[in-house]
Length: 343
Image: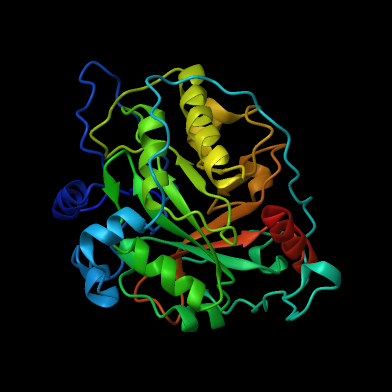
């Protein structure tokens, strides 16, 4: 979920597509140096679909669909405030030795999804040492428009048991492939959730309202994700204080939790985490990007639910590269965690 340095023509296309929100920059602010750890979900690794690709596939009817797609707008908030934090249970680090196909759970939990062992490759493989992604049983991906048309059944059979799908960024951009990916991922049997790329020059409450307007309230979906990181290609060059970053994150997360009934997951990168999140937000589940080392080395003492271990994954079902992730736990941990999200 990161913007690497790319040729100017792609930066221009990204800007026009809304990857940087349309709000103007703060010209008095200091520039931010982004993380060098890059991933592919927002970069060009496949032919870029036209803005209307979702419409041509799904044949959506414009105005009626817009009104009925996700939800009514929440109550508007005029300013950012800081809601209280609450506890959350995250799985302990307990790497599984292999993926196990389980079709049923006991008792009231009913049907359990089948877990596929991962068959992914990597264009730039990393030696993670003794604690590698292969020690984890449940693998998944995150995607955006830059993956183009995805063959979701094929991708799932290669080991994508879950997918986080780019939905929105800022307060005015919707990923043009979101609706198509949202629908097809579920049809293929993946557990899927939506993520929002946060824009630091815009009020948090308006961004939450935009996300809620565009992302359906599905009790079977994974918790929503707020992607918080530095973006050197954004029109927003503003550097906030740690307290200001935390305030915006909490406002956004609190609004989403009230609407969806699930505590949002915080996705972040090593540099932003070290500057602003180390020791903070202990009641939230974390999704950590660490493509060169195990998260224990990049994020000491931080419990995590998801680890993004590669931005250069290769898989049948996707042209080009794709981000690869693991869930922190065994197959049983995964199903228990899913059950907790739906309770």
